[in-house]
Amino acid sequence: MRTLAIGDIHGCLRALDALLEVVSPQPDDVLVTLGDYVDRGPDVKGALDRLLALSRRCRHVPLIGNHDLLMLAARNNPEKYLDWFQVGGKETLHSYGADLHWDLFVNAVPLEHWRFLEESCLRYHETSTHFFVHANVYPDMPLDEQPEYMLCWEKLDPANSRPHDSGKIMICGHTAQKAGRPLALEHAICIDTWAFGGGWLTCLDVEKSAYWQANQKGETRIGLLGFRDR
Image (cartoon, rainbow, N blue to C red; front, side, top):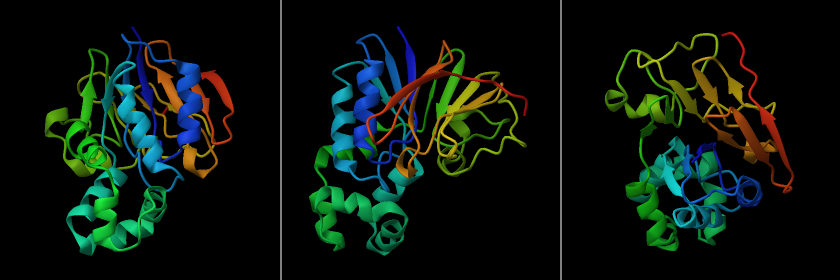
């Protein structure tokens, strides 16, 4: 059994498909996706369809990201629709073939996609050695007490990041590593490697500290984490 984690997908279906092909999740693998499935990339609809199918290949544990929350807020509040549209919602709408009107957007998204984002996605996932969040945590606060802002919105600053009181290693996304390689600290690993911006989509094998990457051209590569001092 492997514990795997995939960083911010952002509608990059071609990269996701190429990544899943080389990783080949098995039925006894646990695959944690770290959120931000929607916005900015070209095929949000296709990416969510693929994620819904993952539960038939392995144990899929989806987390929720800030962009997923923005999409849910836009569905529930037309006043927040324009804000979401300006930070990536436009690309999401296009993937569903939706008109720019709020009421048409709500109905264009399949009900199973809404259920996935609202009901299936968790705020965090924890194992005996690691915990997984979209963005970040307060180091001195239990995971079940962390506020949504910290879990889903707060950037990871390597210079000021401190180990969590649990002693477990944090696996996160959200803070884009535009050089295309994961950020590996002794107590935290960030695997958002800027898939939508011309970078790579990363899948980390948590126990082996090895990773696979794919981009929107369908290219793939592999690597090992290089830990560095804070």
